[in-house]
Image (tube, helix red, strand yellow):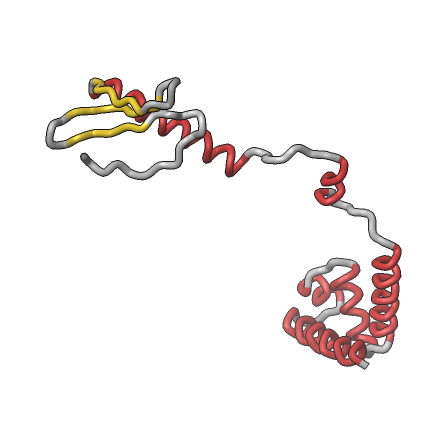
Length: 158
C-alpha cells in the first residue's frame, strides 16, 4: 500500500482511507455498529471525495486551534484576563514607595539631567524635540540621558 501522510483526524471521522499502488485499489475502512472492522472498495472519485472531507476537517481543526477561544469565560477567569486588573494594597504600597524613591532620586540629579529626564520620560518628548527646545544636539541629549540613568541607578542602589 502507498504511504499516505499521517494526518490528525477529527473524533467524528471513523474512516481510514487506503490505496494499494500494485493493484490500483482504493478502500475505506471503518468499524460497523457491532464494532467489526469493515473494508470496502471504492472508486477513485469517492476516495478523493473522502480525502477532501478529511482535509476540510483538518483545516477546521487547525482554525479552531489557532483562532477560536477554547474556554468559556466565567467570572473566576475573567479577572485574570482583565486589562486593568485591580492592584492589591500590598502592590500599591510597593509602587508608591518605588515611585517616591524614584522621584527623590531624580531630585538629586544635576539640573540638566533632571530637566531632560523629566522631558523625555514624563512629558514623552523625543531626544530631537528636547535638543530643539534647548538649542543642543540630539547626541548631547542622548549622552546626558544615559548619564542620568546611570546616576539614578547609583542613587537607587544606596
